[in-house]
Length: 610
Image 1 (cartoon, rainbow, N blue to C red):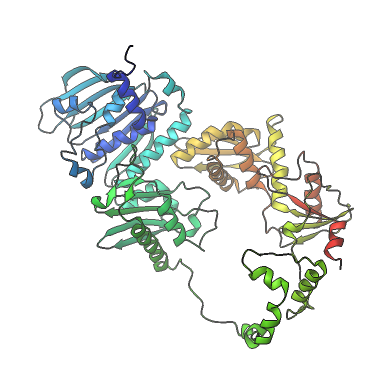
Image 2 (image 1 turned 180 degrees about the vertical axis):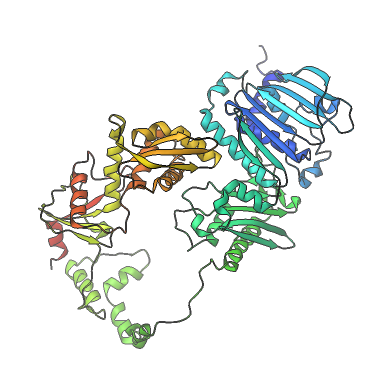
């Protein structure tokens, strides 16, 4: 019987191994940039065409390589960083496994030009399918230029899985930004399809942070700096007003290596507790410097996931450092020890619960239902007894004869086919500038004004593709300047935005002109509206089941909806209810939240029955 196990050919083995390291163009960009950093370059240029699919080139002015090193660099596991196993635990450089160039050479056509300061001429090496095609002397400046063309040309299935150019470019910009933030002293330049995207001169960590985040962060960063014998934490956190709905401006570096850590993010979120909304994320760029022997960075091919020797210590230091920084800049809330004199007069203070009242209350079934183990919200078998306890609970409270409102919240009987037929002359009540209470023929309904308006706008924008939404031309067109990644995102959305009333044109490097806006967007609010739209779109982008158009429509509906806390007149409330009743699905928002709850007359009668 023939043997069934055989060794893979080298070129196939290399292609499989390459899949772990080079997953997309951005993966190759990361590896090449880190190699340039390790070469002690002070200037690094990245040139890409077609989002890296046709060309990725990194040029540095580092120390270069000899002819022999240039050839050996593309062999698997070739490295200058490790001689003995102990070296793995003292790693401070970026690339050390010796897999990056070998992986790139397995899936692209590669050309390397390099020269050391002491050499008269440089070396050019051409490689294809992991094989050296040629090695020749060449005139070259000191440093290294490596270009990879036609990524995955020999693995068509992998190439077919690449996303659109704009999506792949976004990933490249992210990797470029991370390396640039880790090494602010290096000059970085990025050129895409012949157009300069980034030009960042070398400088301080603060200067690089402003270059990346934007000039509007100049006065919105709080400096973090804590030094201990175990570790050093430095960097910046954004003031609470910079918090966003996405994690777009969050960067953690350990020994200058970008990492992803939900655990450490939680430490920062705790430090911001009470300062930002629960569904918002703080901005930060934090650098942790720790003894390499206390960290294992060799747990994942991308080296973005690491293990600490004692992660609880790191967590505690990070949280304390951020809290300390916020307190120093008088951002953290301070405790107010002054007490309102009126509080001192309350019965709860002046007349503590007596022993006899404690005994009397503890005998009642209501008390037992909330205190006995596994008996929360216990309903007594005797319905009459239970009702009496509830009456006692309210009548014994001080001031029980005063007016109070009980919010029914989830006590109502929500109906999928509930009627929105509200009499035209009915008086409507707005509660907490959020809920509209309206009488119906069979009882009453409570409408959440923001969620109801979201449903109305969602259906309106859905139908806009069939019949484009009206555009109002701007008297004075607004220029919008964005970060490179946001510019890529907006460029991808321009056509769909036109269907719902936006007229936006590209205007040079990462800039756009807003020529027209939907009729229901207030003039003067165009710039803020687009910036919020982009932020919400990124928030939705984590959910892959939605199409780009669906995400855009949901973002527009959420952004343009009447907000909770906005005062509405009788005419506005009636108009909102009428528009909601005309919706195809008036009961829910697109995300499934109820827009209104109905309380029918029978249910209300039962609430007040004896």
